[in-house]
Every structure is written in C-alpha cells, then in structure tokens.
Length: 217
Image (cartoon, rainbow, N blue to C red; front, side, top):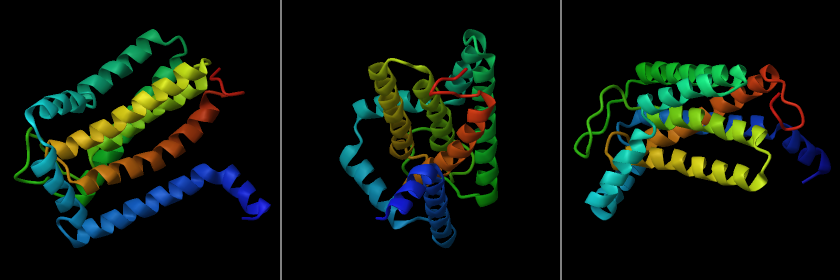
C-alpha cells in the first residue's frame, strides 16, 4: 500500500465506511426484493429456535429488547434536555431520534416486507425491513457513544462505557431475531443504514457543537 493511499484512507475513512455500509445495505435489499426469505434468515432462525431458545434467555432478551423501546429512548431524550447544561447536546439527541425514526418509517413503508411468521414470542405490528429497533437504537446509542468519546476525559471510563453501549446495541438487534419479530437480514440492514446515517449526522453535529481538540464546547 502506497503512502498516498494510506493518507487517503486515514483522511476519508468514515466516508469509505459509509460507502461500504450503503453498498451492503443495497445488496441485502436487492435479495429481499428477489426472495421473500433469504438463506441467511432461515439458517439463523433454525439455530435460534432449535439450539438457543430457553425460558431464562427469553426473559432476559425481553428486558433487553425493551431497552430499545420508544418509551426508553424518549425518556432518555427528555432527561438529556432537562439535565444537560449544554442544551445544544440535548437538542441534537432529540433531533437524532426524530430523524432516525422518520427514516426508518419511510424505508419500511417503501419496502413493505412482512414480518416473519411462526416464531414470534412477542407481538409486533408494522413492516419488517429494516428493523426499527436495530436502526433507531444504533443511531441513538451510537450518538451517545460519540458524545461520550468527545466529552469524557477519563480514558478507562470512556472506553468502558463505549464498549458496554456497543454490546447493548448488538444485544438489542439479536433480541429482535430471537423473539421472532425480525429476520436476520432486517437487523443487519438496520445496523448498516444506521451507521451510514450516523456518519453524516455526526459530521454535521461536529460543526454545530464546535468540537475542538476532542471536546464539545
């Protein structure tokens, strides 16, 4: 790899990630339009239903999936508006939740993929692709990770919180597959398009909050 190429990658890595996420999302979407159920979806459901499901894990994942519910996200958003001294941050969290939710609703109504049948452990309404929990929670909690990285000075606390929230994002996504309300491809697509969206949103946010030297002013 040449030095010039390394510099380009280092400088534009987030846009490269965005491009990859969009391409992968479109690839999944193409397969969804062509086939009602993908081989990946069938394989994962077989493993989850026959090998993994058990009453204790079901109770745990019902709690985890609720951490990505509208009630929890709205509550955190309201608290951010009340508690945070920098009101711009609270407003950005609010705007992020509204935009990511709107984008998910638009995509679902355009694509109109039915939810999986026969495996549900909870009831859900609406279309399936992309997963709202995966998409909105990745955007919401992903923004919190971004804000923590920019605001928290203690490195150990910063990375510990970032890792814990990242695990929560993945766990919420898995819970949707486990509970039978989404296909695996729904969840993967939700992750991918949300990462692409978050790159654009945080780039704009960087200018709005006037981030200098790694801290939000």
